[in-house]
Length: 318
Image (tube, rainbow, N blue to C red; front, side, top):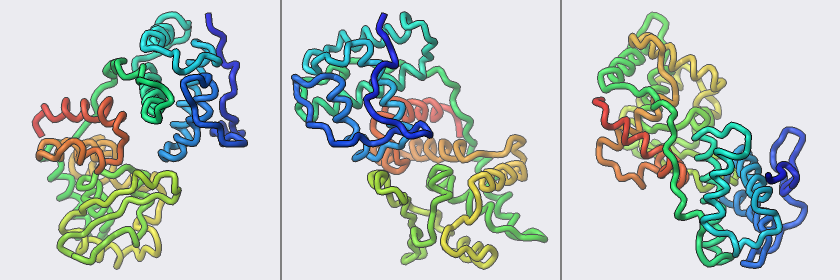
């Protein structure tokens, strides 16, 4: 049985994050060892803007592969059969529980790593290409029906005209249901990211402070009434730099309370509105590749996880 946790391909910081190697490794070739190729993969992960969490997960998955195949194994000698046996070992022989979701993530790691080696011509062909993703058995997320969306926006709009008016719920709900942005992206919006040069066609730049995420930046269309809604919101809250100068937890409360005001007992969440927006775009005929870019997802995550779930949800009446 392979010995595990014996390699240190990357160094780690005290909080568990992956730290950069002291020197940049050489570009891999067919004769390179698996350990050397994995070390050379680190700068590529940084270039792609992968999060520290993803880099750490990829590192752990590739350490398992090195333990199983031998870290000194030449990458040019690794076959699809080797990788299939590795996945079988993880699922049935390792002696540690491996859920379908964990296996899916490890397969994603293999596909990203070996695709990179093939594209850079370090190996002649991609041995991970024939491997097939197993669909996750996780339950589908809850989404809102059209009638529920209407109720949510109406309830939020009524809050702007209450005895103690509050413009934030409508601004937030309409923004997320229209753009499908994530909670962290919403919390990171700066006023300078909003373009109202054409009030009839307002847009939002989703940007990141970390230059590693530049590839995920994108420009999104905002609701047609956004300029008017924003003006009312600014008159009430007077934001100086960020659109929402509060914590992400507070934004969650705003959505939850707006959902309950609309008669949705459990309220609503960012993830529910994001997936609802995606299903609406799909049913409206938006091209899958356009959707992938709109929602800021990698090709692998989109094709293996998100798009299949959207298609399943789209079969439900909205």
